[in-house]
Length: 411
Figure 1 (cartoon, rainbow, N blue to C red):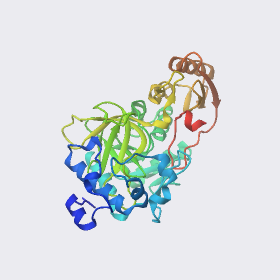
Figure 2: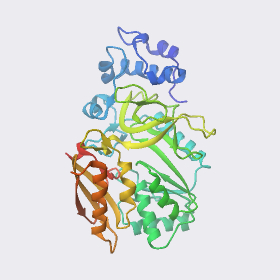
Figure 3: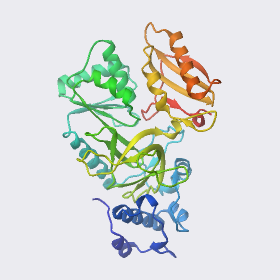
Figure 4: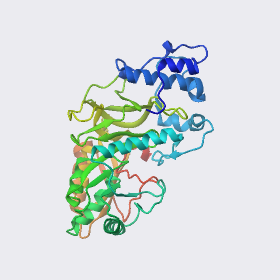
């Protein structure tokens, strides 16, 4: 493994931070009793306390390292970079992009993880990507996701016929649009053997549509972020689960009170990168929700997560307190025959805007009536929905598409 140091080697090479001993650093409860996780968490935390200006300050008192929230990261991004060049940048879904530095060794580690994940499905296939070119390098096998669906399908057909393409990589929302366009025209693409979903939450309802349009393709999905790379890959044997890249990341699932979740219990995902010493990420609360699980596939010896619910910022606030998961609403909206695409924006706990792109000949009145009933069922009788029928719903600069925008982001 790249960049691994045993605890004893760390002491010999780097020593302890001034005035502190290793025993004063507390290990998160999620890692206790797990020697590999304990050892590598301790090593990266002690390294950061000795060498990173941000962590030298925030870990000065010892104890349990505090959570690094997205807001703290954005506010102290320059201090965390510590003068190093930016090698990656998030899409800016929270209005301020996060700037990241990886050294070549850290990048090579993530490349190996992606190749290993392809191996779970039989190895690398000739592929093409439909992504946001603002965030990805333009190559002959890449195409702009903001292009019209017809142009995207023409690109795919050309790659299949002239280059033997057998795998397509794109965002789930875009794959659904491609699939719907094909199915509306009575067409399928049987030549593809694999579909890889990236960057966005991937839901069962999306999978059903994609499978119909690409009938011979196995569907893979990765859970990743710019800050730490690939976090987990969907299990090819038990697709409800995603296996964690536990050799490079410490992953915690935490309740609101900071205690570890039980198996199957949804909590916030917190990540520690064991290997990025150039720009450490220690207990990074990325803003996602998921549950730990023991995968029963018996094939892949890595811990796993399940019930990946995506961003907390996609939660919708209930007027009585608490939240409504977007996944409780999305199948009812997405599967509506009247629309091609949608986006829900919450303005107040009871006021919503539903943007929608209509199909030809759509009965807008029937759709609006069903949606009003849906929101009343989930948010109470005071729920009001304003409809915005539009021709386009733009993606974020990095290519992601947000179907739900919660109250905080809409404010």
